[in-house]
Image 1: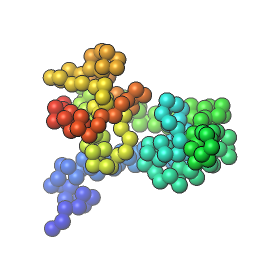
Image 2 (image 1 turned 45 degrees about the vertical axis):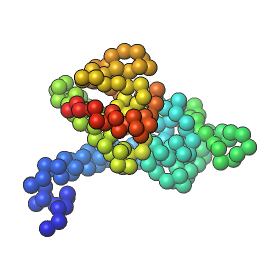
Image 3 (image 1 turned 30 degrees about the vertical axis):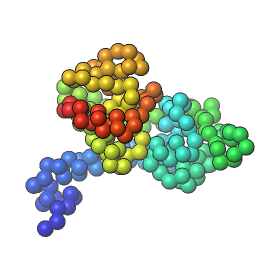
Image 4 (image 1 turned 120 degrees about the vertical axis):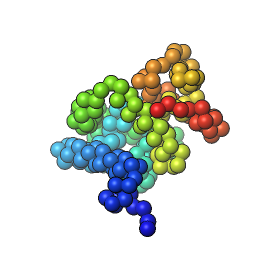
Amino acid sequence: MANYIFDPNFQTLSLESKVVTGLGRISEAFRLVLLREAQTSNLTPVQIQILVFMKFHNNVATNIHALSDELNLPLIDIYNEASDLIDKSLIAKKEIGDNHQNVTFSLTARGKMAATKLSLYADKILSQVSNFQKDDLEKFYGYILNLILELQKNDLLSMNRMCLCCKHFSENEEKYSCTLLEKELEFKELRIDCAEHQPLNPYEEKLKSKQRGFY
């Protein structure tokens, strides 16, 4: 008999399937709050994600390819959504050199104001997470970091700017440090989205994976 994750009968026998089902429920909550924000702002969920990403990641290349990687969407989808945002005067495009396909985007003044407001769409979820006990929250964060890392290794996530897969990060006997910041880090200080992130090469990632073991 096949094992189906979403079969309630199988879930009674499999803790793993219940965890996966729970993660799916959590993703539904994010989808819901994003859809509600889209309905009130006359934007699509993808357009909201683009504006919010650009507001807080102006150091990252904000072109069609970067946005496609960040949101895990086809280039044509990003192109269409970005074109609509340009028409709404929320973002502006700039061609680099003579290559008309080499285009970067930036927020307009109107876009910055909209992005500031839109960036609050997940606050209702944040308020629920804030009810966790500190120790439970740190353990939960550790599980999330490891899961994101494993999903990326298996090509289920494309972008990852966490400490755990950064050249500046080092770990020794449950002590963490950042060579760029030149300081030791508490576990709760490990970043999940770092502006100074430098990706590891495949060999370095494999070596660090063997050394890692928290939570």
